[in-house]
Image (cartoon, rainbow, N blue to C red; front, side, top):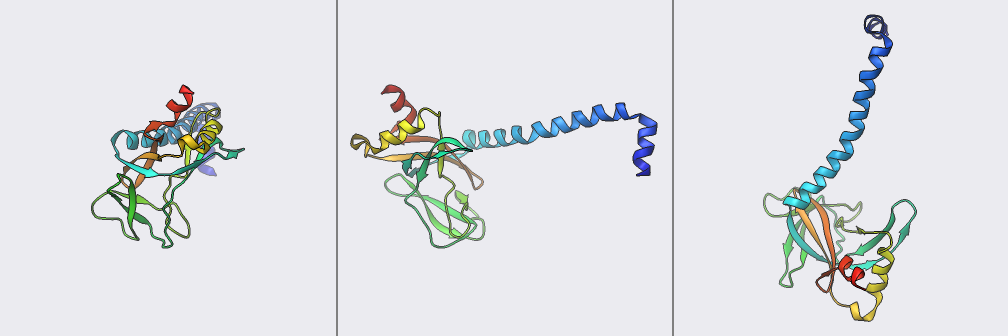
Length: 176
């Protein structure tokens, strides 16, 4: 406490408040800017994979409208990392679940608590398009192939698009 009093006496309270406020504002802006830049870097430089999904549209008071993605893959085992491979059909899948980071090849980090789960459970889109996307997926003429493209880098992935029969869902909905 003596040190703070000494600083206040030497510098003055008003002179101390302004720099502290500037530092506080800078810290508040650094976290979101870093998070956005990090995800953008993955989108720009990550390796692209395609995962088969079945979209549904929930409403969440806190998250707004989004398309919930149910991946047909599931693992009863748990591990920290999943090695990725691409099948003959062009879709990616987790070929092995392990506790140690793979030494080579693409991998993703586990997002589940009790079993291995891919972190591709939500696709955010314009609020007015999400319910229409869910309705579109339920129509018989679009019972075809639904998949997401993701970019993977250093175990992290970012969803880059949701596609139905090879066409971006936003393009289909805007063309209706």
